[in-house]
Figure 1 (tube, rainbow, N blue to C red):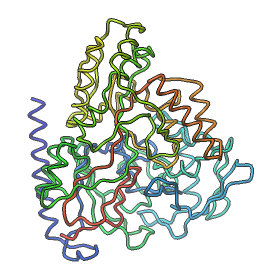
Figure 2 (figure 1 turned 120 degrees about the vertical axis):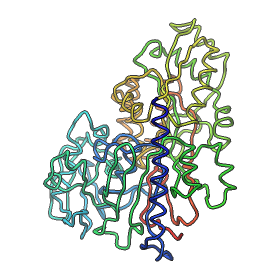
Figure 3 (figure 1 turned 45 degrees about the vertical axis):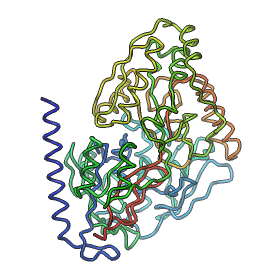
Figure 4 (figure 1 turned 180 degrees about the vertical axis):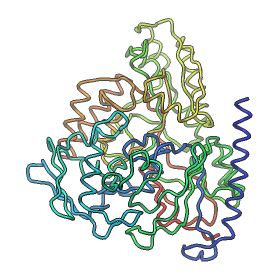
Length: 515
């Protein structure tokens, strides 16, 4: 019954989107060379948007929607090589490293027409750094002791200790600038109708189906965006997303399966676009649970993973084997870390473990994601040779992310992309003892290295410390890195300047339609 309901719901969604795009074709809007083309872009997305509050947004389905509405003091460069001005035009560090001063951009307004002031910035950063269980990114601002208003266009951020990643950390969506006191709304009212300084503002939101944005006419960067509306349509099934773009019911398919890419490259009316990415597909092991808390068990499982086979069978060569748990496109990545596939070594580790005869575990797999399903089956077959009985449990993405936050899982697979150019976020989020991935892994040496690296301005020193962290993780296998993926998207002809940054953010300020 549930399967039939889902099919009917998907069919209804496809019909609705077809109607939407057919109607759009008759409209008009801005955009270079497109005066008679409605500037209404529809993106078929693999993840649902469930939260539009910057500080509590958790999955990429939330984050990449939040980034259309909100902006921060600093901005990530498109290639993830550093930061550039955002709502602040410049910043300086005090000689002792214990404070930073930011000069605010003049003439910026919120989507409701209200001018952005230093008061809004202070309130936003104070709210973001206020500890709360539902704020997974608050740890990035832990070193801030206070935010002071110097004058109407200047603020000063005080720190407990020197903190090299601060300007980068302030580029994260969770440090977004909001109107003070939610612009007179309650927090819940603001969640349902957020107010930001980004290129778009919320138009409508159908939970479990789609979220639609419209152009922010008060956007400070004049002439942008080119689009009138932007719709993120939640379509968890990869094949349905592909069909929607091929038939013209959506303009962009987020994350086509690798098996479909070659065929789509030869399909008229669409193109496959690839962007550099920090994406890592990895296996999340719950280190709190027996026998996954046994290093020998984890190392056995790691040795038994044939990553080359996964790249070939699942990704058709579009991905590459991951040797560490840090993205290859981030500062500090250590290419010298070894990743070895050896069933002999895997069996030796199992023999040393607390469960030499094997055990049973469950892998949680996202529904509608054939690639992760394939990987799960490969892992199931590989680990079976070690006496490990693996059961596959298919769940929707929202439930899987919720279970991860609660620690309610044995094994799951996720895709990680960094949100800022500095690797400190990745290190804290993934590997610190209180890491948000909730794997239960704890290593005081790793904690110390991460903390020391963040307080050191010397890039070479930081790289050495991050290399040490990667080596420890390779030896203890608290998680298993699988593959590094580029950002792949199927885009209909007539969509111009569609861009996705190396950090995964949709940069749709200059995107427009010509047909």
